Each structure stands twice: as C-alpha cells, then as structure tokens.
Length: 136
Image 1 (spheres, rainbow, N blue to C red):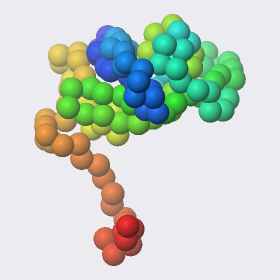
Image 2 (image 1 turned 60 degrees about the horizontal axis):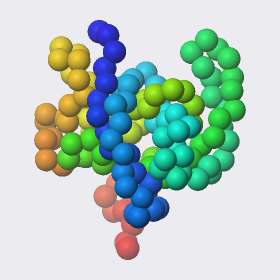
Image 3 (image 1 turned 45 degrees about the vertical axis):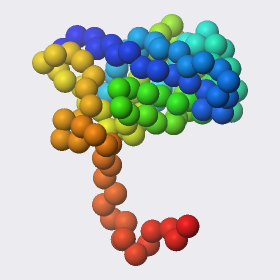
Image 4 (image 1 turned 120 degrees about the vertical axis):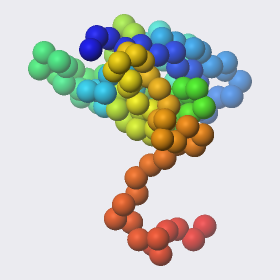
C-alpha cells in the first residue's frame, strides 16, 4: 500500500496562549499511540507526565517520555491524547484515529473522515446499558 501521510494540527490542550502547529504525520494503523519527535513536544510546551516503556519494531525496548495532553485536529475532527516522545517525525496511530473517527483510504493513500458519518464522529459503546449512564 505504501506510506500514508496527513496534515494534522497539534496543540497543547492546557495552554491556549501557545499557537497550534500543523505537521505532516505518518499515518500508521498498526501503531497505537500518537508519537512526536522531541522538538515538536518542546515547541508545544508539553509537560512530561511520566515515562513509558515501548517495544520498537526490531524488538528492542526503550523508556521514553509520555507527554500531554495534546489536542489533535484533522479536518472537522479533534481528540485529546497523550503522546510518546520518540522518533524523527510525528506518527498518528490507531487510538487517536479511532477517537476522531477517521479512516485510511487505501486506494487514494490518504486519511479521510468516515464517509458514513461526515459531520460528527461516531463511536461504538455496545454493552453499556443506557440506564447506567452518568447523571451529571
């Protein structure tokens, strides 16, 4: 299929005075998280929340900073996530993609908004009885 990239907007969700940045991110549904290079995390002023151990593609393990929260925007979608600070380019994984209800279109090799729900993100909440919802 080849590599797929998308322009996404990133912002520090706790500091509205910092301008968001638009970056070209590698889109990888085989990865779980949002990954950011150190220079992007620093430009966004993201605080390190903790350290996490990650297993790299070659099987090696490495402890890296986990920073956030990050507001991620793609077209008319957004989500809030933490980011693993590692690598030399931003990478958008499955968790933020699911949260924003976006998909990879393999034929066009691009990230798209779910065509079945173009105006509002959808999510699956099966197994949660409606009567068990919070009362706030």
